[in-house]
Image 1 (cartoon, rainbow, N blue to C red):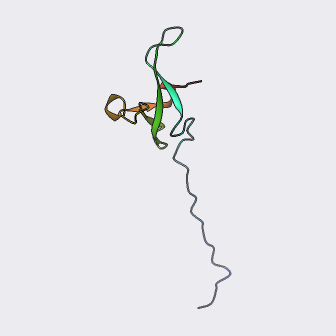
Image 2 (image 1 turned 60 degrees about the vertical axis):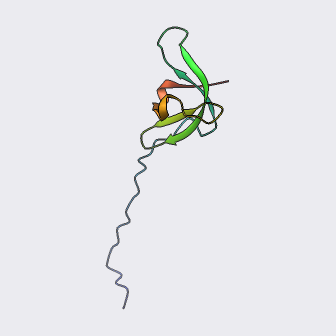
Image 3 (image 1 turned 90 degrees about the vertical axis):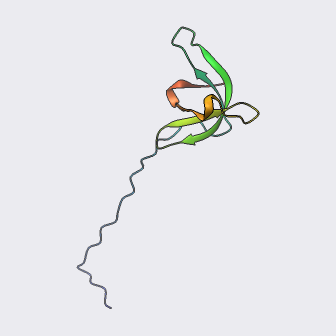
Length: 82
């Protein structure tokens, strides 16, 4: 089979659908639960899991137990614990 120099190939581009996340598993964060100044927060908690396509996180206690039955939280509702 000969190569056809006139035949053009199109390369599929992979669209990055996942968001670049601010936090990684193991990071310590606060969960923002209120809008008062200063913010009402719970925690600190540990980032247990990330869901880049949705921009969400699961949090856990230091003992590894998920908080709020494994609910996922948006990045805007988290704040880095210092």
